[in-house]
Length: 389
Image (cartoon, rainbow, N blue to C red; front, side):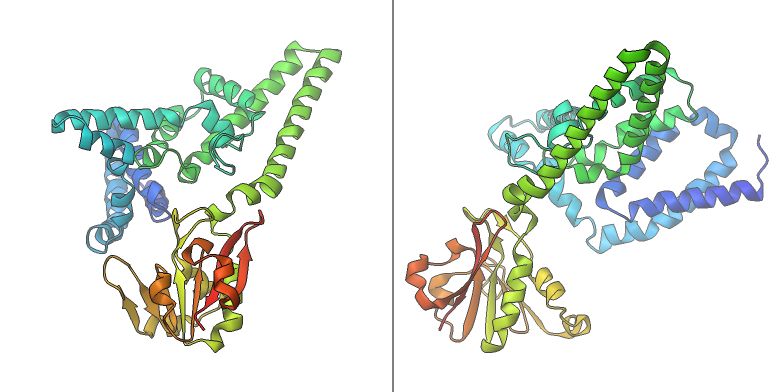
């Protein structure tokens, strides 16, 4: 049995500290680390048995570091987000449970295969090279986790990872396949942001493939053929990068700006110009050019862009559910946030209403009450500022 020394204890401490620290950085990591750790131990039991003392120290330290996270998850509501996005809440699965079989066992079986389908969706080429970032409307070609030209590097990299004797290859493979688990058990189709913890591994594999392809070309192809192949690869790469730049600078602001809460900064700046003239300002938390299909948190943008005093906000009285549970109003100072009801709110005196165009009557009916309009990058009106006077 390997002797226990101070150097081993130091590395056990650092390894457990940084591994558990990862769990404090995001919800996906809180799921990924335990799954990754479980399978890593499962496939290395024989090796770990030879260093069981240091492994026990590592496990004990990890448990100590994760205790605060366990506490806030169980008693401080930190697990609320997970409950909201868990795959069992997915509308497609819920619809099946409601209208499908009555047997709970069959429902659980369906949930398992429903999860398998979600997991495999992350391995689809379309997600990897086109749809992952969701920067364009459905049906249009967008950006994936990798550029299309990196697909060739990815293939070569996978072959290299399989055939070459790479140190800790088993850990890399476990990292790759368990990294998809957190996002695959959520109630949305695919979310590239929750895969950031495997991004370094993806980049490592593609880099390994690029080096392998370069060596192969130098070995097998000479002269004009080598120059032609490299020229094609460089041209294709440049076109991919140019397309990504155009997508980011032109198409993304036009097609998806609203989905990323564009307009709230301009709204806050406008409200700051007029707020001294009003006793009350009401923000509609629903938004959407074509209808109320999105709900946001305008109070966060108000606090940030108005540079509202944090100490004042922490101590000022806040009011919840002004109009009951059916309309979740939240209010502080002269600001209220909830659902605008024109027939009710228009009766308030000296009040400024901020909402999407469909929150109000037609523009011609508002007349002088419409004091300003906020537009999206695509030219569509996103918000109206309407006075009740």
